[in-house]
Amino acid sequence: MWSFAELLGPNGIFVNAIARGPVNTPMWAQFAENAGPDAAANRATRAAQLPMRRFAEPTKSPAPSFSWPIRTTATSPE
Image 1 (cartoon, rainbow, N blue to C red):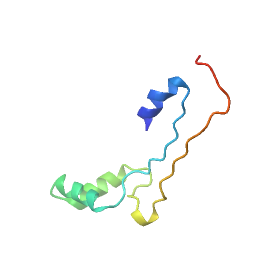
Image 2 (cartoon, helix red, strand yellow):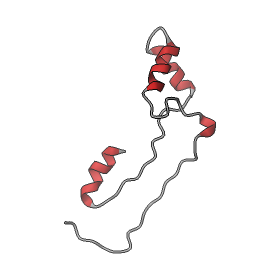
Image 3 (cartoon, one colour):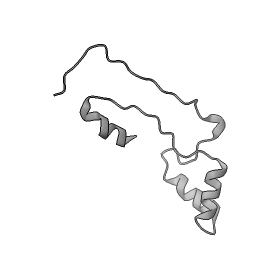
Image 4 (cartoon, rainbow, N blue to C red):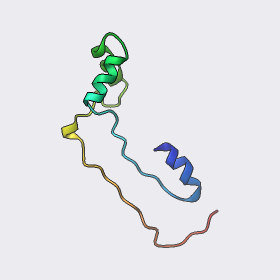
């Protein structure tokens, strides 16, 4: 999402995004298995890099959210 902020920010467009990180799904399990011989250690290493130190669970993930802000006053580029 940083790329959107960098791209659109100079035009006065703000980007707010929710990036919850990796979710404990079969895809991540397969990725850990393909990354080396010790899948559990690979997953633990990745989890240790996350702010919450764990993967999100699919049942606890919030519904996707999106809002389209509307500017009520016109502004000119600076």
